Image (cartoon, rainbow, N blue to C red; front, top):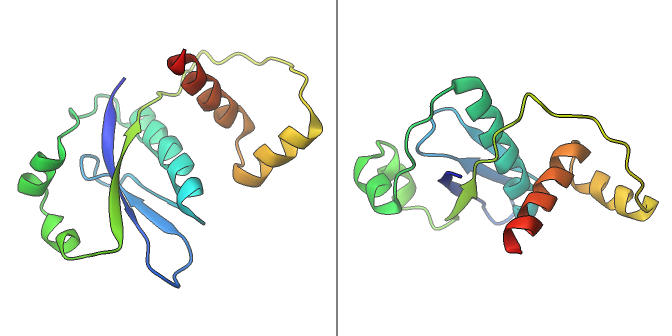
Amino acid sequence: MKEYIALFEYEDGAAGVGVVFPDLPGCISYGEDFDAAYRNAHEALSLYADGEGALPAPRTMEQIRREWEEWSEWEGRRSFHTVKVALYPLKASAKKFNISMDESIVARIDRVTSNRSAFIAEAVTAMLKAK
């Protein structure tokens, strides 16, 4: 599993949180709040990886500070922080399953994502890694 550093940008009074991956040009995301931005960042990273083929090796924060051409623009901002986002590649061999789940859980999932399958797969993957 690869983890890429993402910069989460937010400003007081602004709507939403933007996400940029310094290692992956053009890989950006957004969310109405930090939690949504974080979930969407995982999806953006997976979609980027699926479309790009081989990805560069993730850099450390120190390498990004030294090498990323846009760092000087970000350096003076107080309205961002860094988070490592894990790459969960999309699988072409996905298989459809029917599952039963409490309606209230499904409603809560629908409030935070438009892709139930990806959300559930990510949640299960995280739970399995914790065990």
